[in-house]
Length: 245
Length: 202
Image (cartoon, rainbow over all chains, first blue to last red; front, side, top):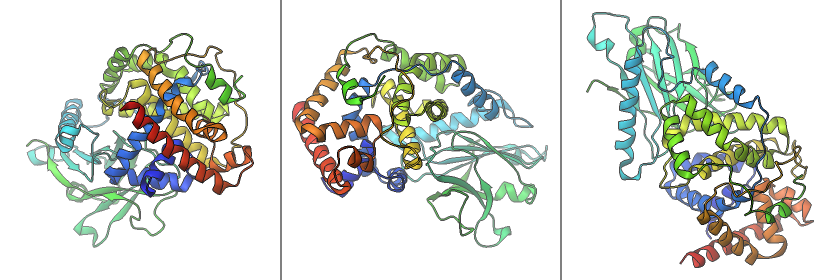
């Protein structure tokens, strides 16, 4: 076995140390060869899990999970978005998200790329353009964390809802904004609270027009956020699409 | 009590089937992908004992295992639409999520967690063949044959690592071998298992 094969095998076996394990968790997102080797080893060894004895968790565990779903507003397709964003718009956006996913991965059917969706509120009632949701698709390979981002420009409330995000132990997702009006470089909008639960932020410092035209990005950073003030980990960028097309 | 995973492993293959069949789980996952909370609850009821078994065996401590299990189900909720029935059975897909999450956590916490500590909780007592499908038992049989072929301590190491989440260091302690030796043995065992599996399947 070559080095990559050994890494994949030991990653699945579980014997890599924490740092190496995290590195592999990240690398597999960008390296299809590594991902394929990991999948092969998962398939090879998973019959062993048949041996694991069942254990009944505490009776209240389900209610704790349900509570976390309620707290997070993680309803996926049901109406939980507050403010002027209509449920049907969100549903429509998700449908398009699914189509992009399907288109992006072709016959492989593997999960989506990082996707940040901008669902604009309705600050200018007469401006049809503003009412149209915009979506930014961030695609680097077949499997990336995916987030759905909604922005209410009236209140400048931003909500990032994980769609297919994967938490990486000891790492944090950090949100960035880039706009010509902000000068060169990107500016931090802070950390995402969790890869499993939505994060809400208030964007007081940015006017609606800037938000409407800005590019957003998410990068994977050390716990506590980027040490340099600029993205240091894997980040994916995309272009805004008009979802009415 | 699962005091020795190696012994526990030998009792597999008999007993009740508490996880519903694959078709039913595929249905439930499809409904969960549509944000169906009722289906999610059914999925939890059908699979939580198995997933908790996987997580607890690695985490050892009940409180930590419960935290991890919550995250596992939130992850399943969020990712249900990425499940592909052509690539893995639903229970294998879910167990892989559970096992990965538990390993991430236990590696992050080492050496806070003693890898050789015993599981806090009593298993349900009935060794079960949870997939309830003959082909899975066959797959286990094939894999077991290949692991047995590795022989002795090295075969035990593979299972202790995979099922109980023991690190190289913990294996080194348990088998009184240098860590470097454990690493070499693991690589050799894995290579041998891969070759054996390829042969058996061809």
